[in-house]
Image (tube, rainbow, N blue to C red; front, side):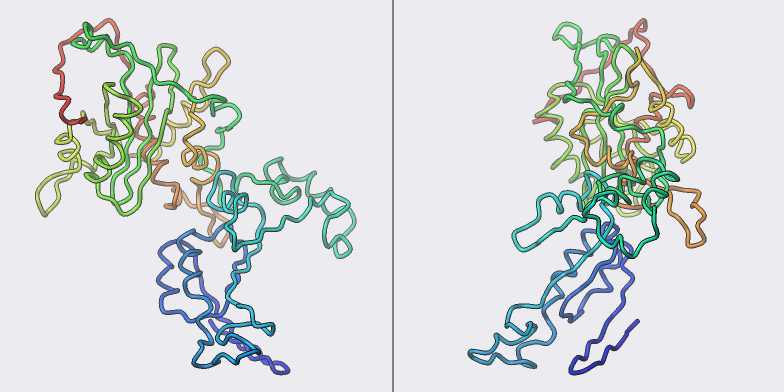
Length: 392
């Protein structure tokens, strides 16, 4: 849509663009703009933000408005001769641990950020235009997460959609200290499965955005998430060789690994007839298809682990380094709200859905409700030791 403003000596053509996600970058291609305004910028995908910056200051160009020595530099400028190629944005506070929170707390040198005071502060803006008791009424009728964001201007859970995992509490499920991988391996005992008590359970999502979480189940029955990996525009082979293998070699050297993946990974490609599972096995990994790809079963498996307790502590404990997973569990992985106000039946496919899907496969593997696997330490069977050449 286009809107033309004309008053006095001002003529401004305003273009409206729907920029819902990274796919809408195409709507900015070849755009010749002076400046941009993002409303509720916390919902803007970082790819859209980066692309927009490259399309600004291009109108008018220096041929249309050539430089005048002593007057201005030409092109897209303000009356004082300085550049008018800016992005202005306003928003309620973004999600904690998100791209926008990091940008806000550590802005680049060419950016300025401003925070409005809490609505309950004596310095609150625009109180003269609001009904008496406006913020007090909001605080009475809404929960703490909502109040933190919309009244106190704090980082918190995004309420643009309904978070999938309402039982997740970062204060309870995220460890205060980094988690250390558990190992009971010795050179003498490596030949028996029962002595490999703590294998790494890697839940993995495939496609061109591979992601995984690296987990263990300890002797107390706790499910520990130790690390995570995400990617963009990367095939599974490159993901394994450039990201997963170096992490395992450096942080988890010599530890046994089980990869739990989407059952669709067994399907063979039409090009070389190899499946994703075939590629992983060729790289030296043990791969198991998840029991089911049912979204209901996967979500229930995560919820069962989140709701469980061990000795009054969390049954599912997450290392604080897993920032993307934590944000996904807190609010990034969400049900989309329709224009009618109804909630979609399935979680939205967004930036956080890949790491969330990957984690669901790992949780499904250990959750007994859906036939997950736990280690029977009374059983003993011989296993073959894989060549270490795959890890060099």
